[in-house]
Amino acid sequence: MQDPDLVVDYQARDQFVGFHDRLERFACIVTHRRAGKTVACIHDLQRAAIMSQRIRPRLASVRESALRVDYAGGGQVRLYRADNPDALRGIYLDGVVLDEYADMDPRVWSEIIRRPWPIAPAGRCSSARPRAARILRAVAARAIGNKWFSLILKASDTGLIAASELALAKRDLSEEQYAQEFECSFEAAVVGAYFGKLMAGADAERRIAAVPYDPAAPVWTSWDLGVRDATAIWFAQVIGREIRIIDYYEASGVDLGHYVRELNARPYIYAGHVVPHDAQARELGTGKSRLEVLASLGLKNLQIAPMHRLEDGINAVRVFLPKCWFDAEKCARGIDALKLYRAEVDERRADPAGTPLLKPQPVHDWTSHAADSFRYLALTLDRQATQTGFYRRIDYASEGVV
Image (cartoon, rainbow, N blue to C red; front, side):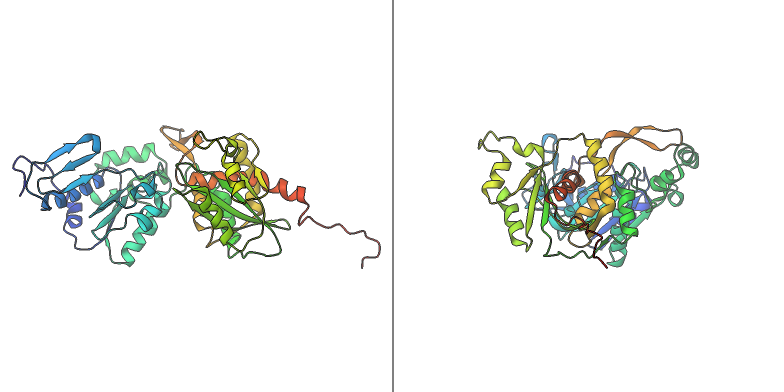
């Protein structure tokens, strides 16, 4: 039964008719700016909710405080935030639209809310959303390869934006920005990335590869301790002049004992553990600091990362990265985070060439935890390795040496 007072004021654009009529289980939409992607996806959800017949008939209602619309037959459309992916675990969903999917933690799709009903990872390539190109290219390729419904709309093809408007956009934007925003270019640079070029250099020099654990060298760990956010841990060995990053672990919503058990489950011999300066702060509930808790759980040689300004820590990482080798498989999530960790883009300001200006602070998203943990590692590891004298160069006397 449909509520007689419910009026759906929506007329699908020709470009989205195929999307609404699709039979495929999954869909991927990549569109130019102002194409109407979000409106089409919301209507797709609304149509399914209107058709639902789960309970006795009732009138449709809007519950703004709950970010929810209830429909006559029991269907419902609800808006969720994706900045804390683990909060989405366990909820029942018949279907999902992941709008601006490229801005989300990759786990949202693969680990948390994948459901039987068609899911539409949707987004647009944008210089203001620098992860979009890389993520959407991968999703679009998967969509085509797995026979999903796939829709890519370029402004030059759709005719949805007047030629005069596109000409103004071309004038005001750089060539790369225009290609990203209006032509769905997948070659977008990560605007504002702190370590992007250095990580690209590591790729080119094949320092992101298989990096096995060497049992002859102890392992240092470096932690970013989250309370409501994720905790991120890097595992590193110092071998001669090389810093070998052999492992990475991240989780959230668990106690510190979980992380200690994860460390103990690995075959590594530990030299020490680097934790942030605020680990010394005592919590009101227990009266203990996280440093004391970790020590009580058996971690030895806990080292406090030195106090520093953020910009100094970022520079320390830039000096540190050329010495690093990363295990491509075990460190995959951490590597992605370092590549994508970036300054916040000021969308209201640009230089004369149209390049967006950057704010002085980094974006706080899923990349922050790995980047912060790596910053503590960079600030501490060289100093600790030098103090222990382990794996330092041995200078032999020249007499008697052939």
